[in-house]
Image 1 (cartoon, one colour):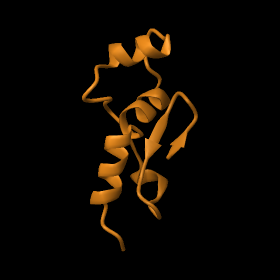
Image 2 (cartoon, helix red, strand yellow; image 1 turned 30 degrees about the horizontal axis):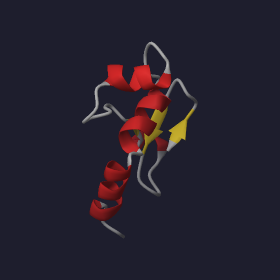
Image 3 (cartoon, rainbow, N blue to C red; image 1 turned 135 degrees about the horizontal axis):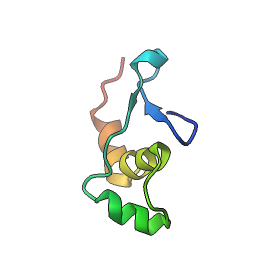
Image 4 (cartoon, helix red, strand yellow; image 1 turned 30 degrees about the vertical axis):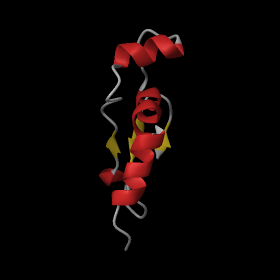
Length: 69
């Protein structure tokens, strides 16, 4: 993960920064629900990444399904 609040990207270990991509969703939640919970009008890229990627279910899925080199 690389973030400066306004921009947040994620990539695999060893990937060059050019291969890091933005996290796009907070699914299965809606962005409006997450924004209300955080007390903001709109989510920043960092908030979207944390709310979407770092939920227990999503993070465990990523760890379980990412192949080891």
